[in-house]
Image 1 (spheres, one colour):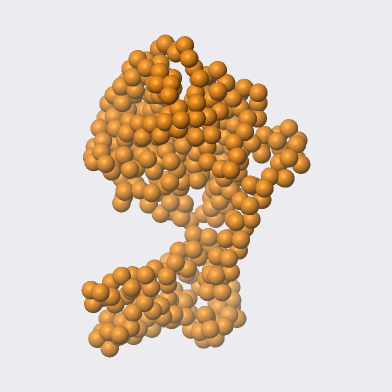
Image 2 (cartoon, rainbow, N blue to C red):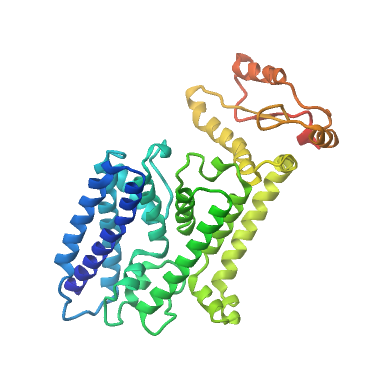
Length: 398
C-alpha cells in the first residue's frame, strides 16, 4: 500500500473540507449569527493545518492501487464526518458528539436520517452546513476533490471506482480530472436551475438552497419540520419531485445528451431499470391510495404529501397495535370524511361535488365523530385493536 499517497490525498480532502466550511460561515455572518464563527473557524483552521502538513509535498510515487482507493474512501468518509460534526458540537446546537457525528454521516452519505426532533430550532448557519453536506455527498467528496485539485498520474480511477456506487464507472474524458470537472459542471447547472425555479415560485432563497441541496443528494434534509409540506404548495412539490428524479440519473448520460449522442444515452440499461422502478413504484402507490384519498384533488389541496401521509395511517395503526398489545394497549384510528374545518371549507361548488360522490349527500358534523371515539376509549372495545374506522358518510363504500 502506498501510505504516503494515502496521506497526501487525505490532506487534500482536509483542505477541501476546510474550504467548504467557509460557506456556512458566510451564511451565519449574513444572518448576524456571530456566535457561530468559532464553530466553523476552529474546525476549518484545524483541517487546513492537517491538510498542509500531510499534502505540502507530493510523494515521488503517486500511483494509487485498488486497495489504496478503498482505504482512502473509507477514511475520507469517517474523518470528514468526524470533523464535520464539530460545528454542531462547538455551537452547542447538537451537544453530543455521537449525535452530531450521526447527523453529519447522514448528510455526507445522503441517507437523510436525523436525530433532531425540532430542526427549526437550529440557526441558519448550521442548517446550511447540515444540508450542504447532502449536496457535497451527492456527487462524492473525492470526485469534487479531483475536479478542483488534480492529484495523481492518471491511476486515480481506483478512487472513482471506490467512491461511486452503481454497476459501471467510466471516464467521459481522457483525463480523470477533466471528467470530474464536467460532471460537476452539470451538477452545478442543475442545482442552479432548481434554485431559480423554487425562487420563481415564491420560496425564499435560503429555503430554496436548503431544499435544492437535499434534492441533489436525494437525502431530503429540510429546514422545516414538515419538510416541503410546510409550504402547502403543489408547485414546490412538483419541482422538487422532478429534480429528485433527474439527480438520480447517471450524470454520464447527461454528458452524452449534451454531445447529442442520444442513442448512447437512451440505450443505457441502468437508466431504463431506474426509470422503470420509479414508474412502477409511483403507479403502484397511486393505485393503492387513489380510491380512498383521491377525492382531495377536487378540493384543491396539496395531493402528493397529503395523500401519502393519509395512506400511511392505517398501516401505522396496525403496526403500533402489534407492538403495544403486549402492554395491554389497544391502538385504533378514526378516518373522518368531509367535515368542516380550516382546511375543508365547503363553498357551493364543493357541496355540489360532495353530493355527487357521497351517499349521504352532506358534510359530516363534528359531534358525529364522538360516538366512535367514546367506543374506542371504553372497555367495550377492549378486544378491538389495529382497526381504522371511516366515518365518511359512505364515501369509501362507493
